[in-house]
Image 1 (cartoon, rainbow, N blue to C red):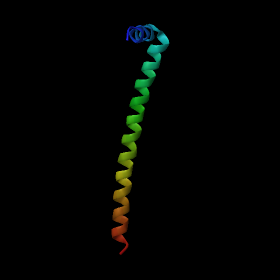
Image 2 (spheres, one colour):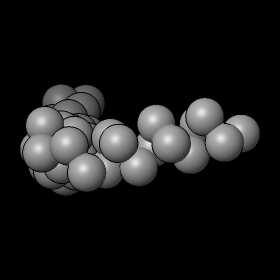
Image 3 (cartoon, helix red, strand yellow):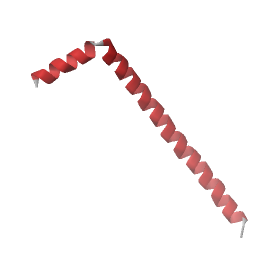
Length: 57
């Protein structure tokens, strides 16, 4: 456990580690935005498809 804590401290103090954490957070934000966009566009397309289906009896 002590070795893990030492490695964690070294990673935290390393500037490359800090940059990687920043990029990971940015990647997470982008991923959430992409998923939200897909869900919203999917709902919009579903609504359009339903109205088109209702208009073609």
